[in-house]
Image (cartoon, rainbow, N blue to C red; front, top):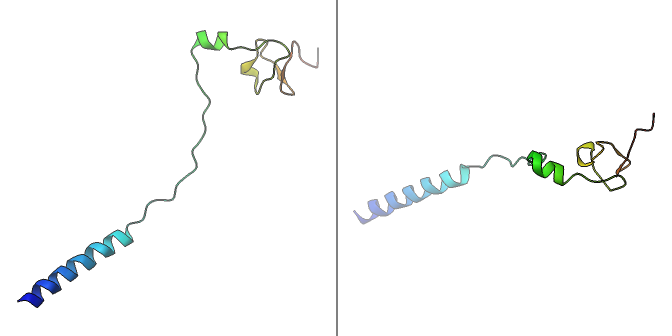
Amino acid sequence: MRSWKAMAALLLCSLLLSQTLCASLPPRQPRLSRQRRMTPFWRGVSLRPVGASCRDNSECITMLCRKNRCFLRTASE
């Protein structure tokens, strides 16, 4: 009788162990970066003057970012 209980416990433990070993997590995907959204108030307050460094057109008061600087006019003018 004691061997049956030991056998059942061993079987149960091996079953649970196999379940945890077989359960795999999906591969992690890199997070997609999204642009920060600002309210119109903060967008107006945070605009940069001519000559300031910038990354894209939306950061400049003139809406012209060229060579990482806020420009007053385009090169074609």
